[in-house]
Amino acid sequence: MRSWNFFRIHALTKTMIKNISAQIYVLRVNKPR
Image (tube, rainbow, N blue to C red; front, side, top):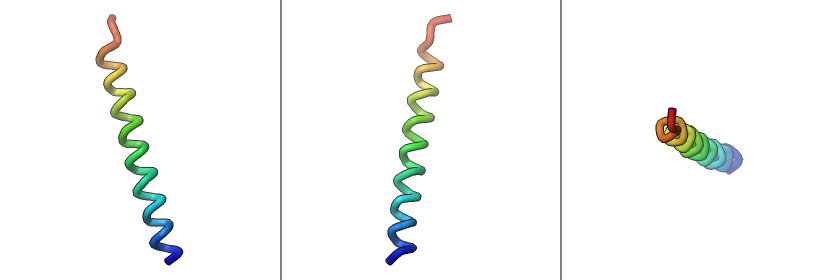
């Protein structure tokens, strides 16, 4: 049970990091030179 909870939190963190890095990438690409 404890490891399952840890796995869920880890997956959630990975998804959040992916979304944040994608947003940063979009901001960098759309930034006018």
